[in-house]
Image (cartoon, rainbow, N blue to C red; front, side, top):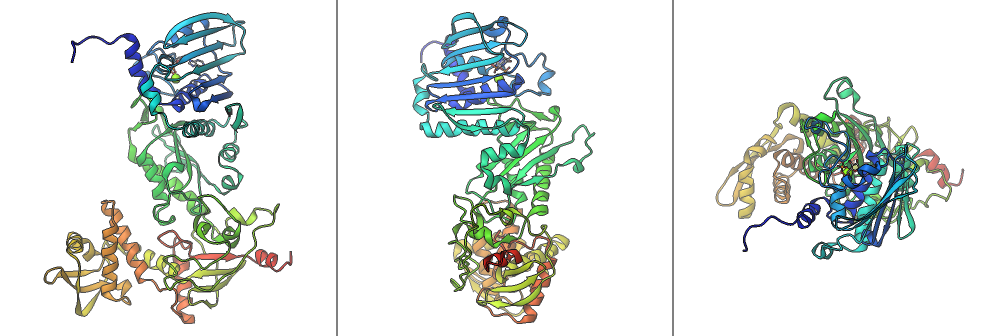
Length: 597
Ligand code: ADP
Ligand code: MG
């Protein structure tokens, strides 16, 4: 170690720049934020070489007065903050006065800007943060900033950049996010001269969603009505939630499709992301995540955006309130709109990673091998041709029924000892007997659990001894109390053995050892140690093992009873693990299949 000395200004600003400008996409983000703060109605982003060669952002906003252009590139220079008081209620995207300085420190920048009220604009050239030239120049109103050779003076940073394709994708993500948050602003993005994204600026969020996600996905999105009824709008702490959530049939293996904005600022927040995931509770298969675009509007003073130089993390004065508002709003949207799955959705040849439950099926084949067809594939193979081109997309996304409600259904019969066929007011329904029964048990369980915190138990006359491995034994011992509440009374009975004294009454038909084995398996799977989650998972699991299996012939009265119980369910359309309980084949579809229309 040498003696202590103050870093050169150059080095100090490079170090500071590192926090703001991590990679090309962060430059894009900062420049676009500046354009939006300047009131731009149109923002053009041009990229070359994934942003390493060139990032240019041109706007038609307020422009920078000639006297201010040099100042704008100083560290901590901003026109957006005046006092410490302003800091507690920030309404602009920028406020730290760091971005231009940071960007200029690690690249070669050309700025051209002209405010509306001046004839001539100014052109400024900087290299490594130093002004190289400055001249008056004719320019359209607004600001153009071109950033060339990013990190040319920071070889260490250059080395860590990912592939050009990856940097391009990150840039696309930022631009599309801002396009979503500002539908009134026209965005255009080019990579190496080719337009890859544009929005109309006409003001409709749906327009932008269509531009971002494509018409097929956009059409299926469910609007969030708005959270006004949660708290009166006049309340100073009112939180309003709007946006769209995807139907449960659209899901991905990562959480990246959940996009959150707070006061039109895109934020990263794992808690709030989880609020969205929670709203899909039991509607999605395990390990799958939904699509959602959520806007939270709240008083500026209720949220602190000054957490990190990148400004994508925020702190809330009342984080629980925000969590709850998002979760309720999303859940409500889902329940209001969630459709019974129509047959054509299985058959419409959806591609890509989404396509939900149908995604892994061959087109139209019902012989899905999954946890519901425990007897193996059933020889049931209804082929439905894909919708004809130009066909109205009527069936694909249209809710056949509002969520939470089933029509009156008449029992027709059972097929393949696995599916119940019923007739409803508009065609026929195929009900997966296992999935449906799972849902029924689950809701009965939950109702009792929530009302009493204790499940009714069915005592075993003789008790039943079961043996487990040492690790399973310690898992069971750890959760004895919870299991007791769930209706499983078990007592240690010699080394690694237990005596089952009772099982939940709802599972009375189940073999006690099997029921307990299912619980143990669930405990072993458990990765999240949240008590609440464990309860829910165990309950789902025992319902699954308690439900009638595919391959079990049911009497007419058993099927009738199941249909009536399913009608009682709050959420009859999916099993607790998120698979559909029924498929609808409408009269129109039948007519189409038979060539009547
Ligand atoms: P901040 O956005 O936090 O204020 P920046 O370093 O990003 O800090 O920008 C510094 C200042 O330069 C801004 O406060 C603003 O006055 C001005 N500025 C930057 N970009 C633009 C733009 N595109 N249009 C108008 N003014 C801009
Ligand atoms: Mg800024």
